[in-house]
Length: 426
Image (cartoon, rainbow, N blue to C red; front, side, top):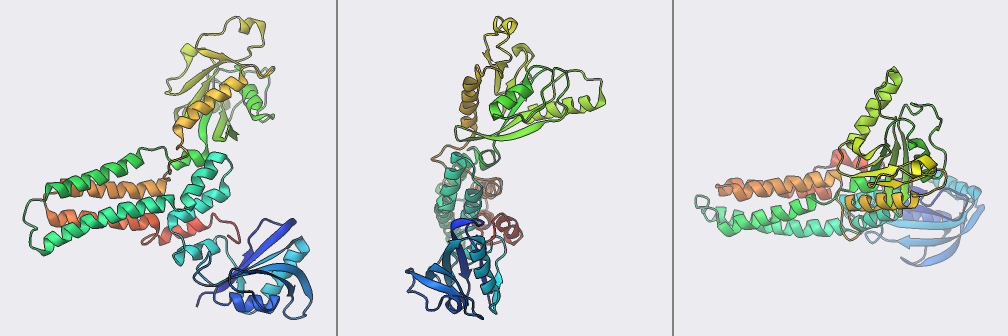
């Protein structure tokens, strides 16, 4: 029998209101012990919450009841909306702890139960986790589209088409048509669905949206890289001195530029270093440049490393000798006066947006893309096959990949990792 669980589901107190949830077969009975009679389903009433042993009044709270399966977890569920002081929350949680058959929920357990009871699928659960972690407007919108079932609906459409192709292949086999050449229309339909899936695979992925577009600031020693990074970040994060080679290791700062997530990285100055530690920093800087999505180069434009997205910045433009020698391809910037910073950040935003999913599209993460690619490969093999039985088997492989994508089958090893991302009470 499933345990009945409880937890604080809102933010940590103090707060104006704190929400405590109970879910499971004993939720209604346990809640009634603390709150007295429960309201009708989906009706809110004010009740005095009392300790089940002493009868002491703990709080006056709003109580809501939800009946299985029409609840967020698919189980009987009760919410106490209490005053949000620490003492109140602790007293109500202690009262629930004293009841037999109840236990505190593990992180993500409410959402996991919603998944296991068919209220959401695995892609929607991943969207909820992303929504909780979202720090920029772009991340919020992408996560909300996933959490509301955008990908689930699309996968359902694809799955129905794939199921239709499988049914067509199985019917032909049942009617002893396995030795006949594959119907060209059948092969074209397999290829068309594979092409549609590959179009989705070619879209920008969710990882950049979640982790931030990697913007690396690089250049020779004393080019003003650390000063520029501090100016963009709005705080002194990197050490700045006139001594060449001050920066030995890289510094990463996550930022939101106009709602676009960016991971801004300062690097060691590029030169032939004789100091062993500095040489390690230079080698790391070169690797970061190779992995960068956008390179902000503070040296001479002709000395910039070969990179597909390079923004050349002419630093220290407040100095008279620098102001008169701005290369045509560079943006004059000054960490002292702020000159050019807005233009540089605008250029970074513009390039970063081209690397991110647009707000009206659904972005696949690495796991989801892997399963979509499995289906596309299976469909391609089915379209290229000359054997109907083998083609039918490839379509079965594709259906299995879709089931793993949505969590219908074969994902037990992933569930702990996915739901551990949630906080307690979610």
